[in-house]
Amino acid sequence: MKSISNKNGINTGIDKQKSVGLFCGTFNPIHLGHLLIAECARDQFDLKKIIFVTSPNPPHRKLDPDLLDAEIRHELVELAIQDNPNFAASRLELERSGPSYTIDTVKQVIAQGYEVNLIIGGDNLAYIKEWRNWRELLDLCKLLVVPRLRYLSDAKGDSEVLKTLDPVGDFGLPPGSFDVVEFPGIAVSASSIRKRIAQNKTVLFMVPPAVAKHIAQKKLYSLSPSRKE
Ligand code: DND
Image 1 (cartoon, protein in one colour):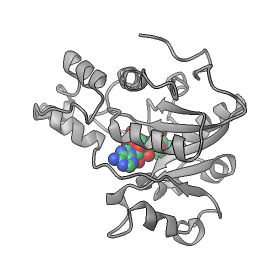
Image 2 (cartoon, protein in one colour):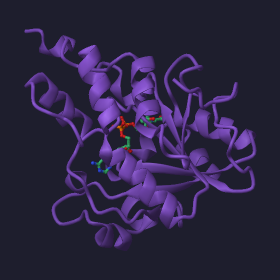
Image 3 (cartoon, protein in one colour):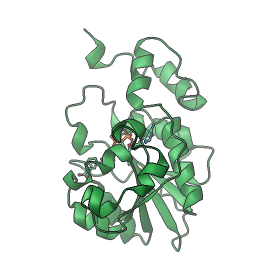
Image 4 (cartoon, helix red, strand yellow):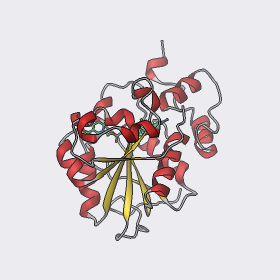
């Protein structure tokens, strides 16, 4: 497989003068929702590149028995983005030990000369104040929040509603902390994909063909510990 990262873990094709979108995720596995989020954010905010960062040890998923080996998740990310020159996969977090704190990744990317726009789902926005050094994180980068219907109570969810929410009043965040990504909404989740695989249902087009093929060939997710009983 083509290597797309330099020794610092970021694709060397990025123009340092331009803003990048940083998309950190568990990606267990990466799916079309993630790709569509990245593309919508790239287009709307004129981002030069979207950097996908696979998190080996997401702090909020410490005890997840379904968490696939990080190198394999990263390999799926590489397969998913391989034909898109606007997307890059980074090994930054894979090469750090300990919990995958986003603040550490943001600092590393900024130190390399980039302006960071951190892409997160609406579900994560609700918990952002529990993230490590969240104030510093919001000082260092702009959040681009993707509406995620089921996590924003009741009717609150589509991008129009999210846009009416106030970082200060509704979330207790500093003014201007986030912008909203125009995203059509897609009811695909990594957990639903894992469940479908366990039920021997197709996941083709919920994940890109190359990812579906690799999952099938390697029988990924079919031997998950939580499904052995
Ligand atoms: P997820 O497990 O939510 O990633 O983790 C996101 C990142 O947050 C990871 O890099 C963690 O290390 C980091 N984190 C979490 C907690 C604390 C801290 C850091 C800290 O620093 O203290 P997923 O692969 O599940 O999803 C990636 C993103 O895509 C998420 O933001 C998720 O909300 C979003 N997403 C969707 N949004 C809209 N519609 C869908 C989506 N599917 C995924 N269908």
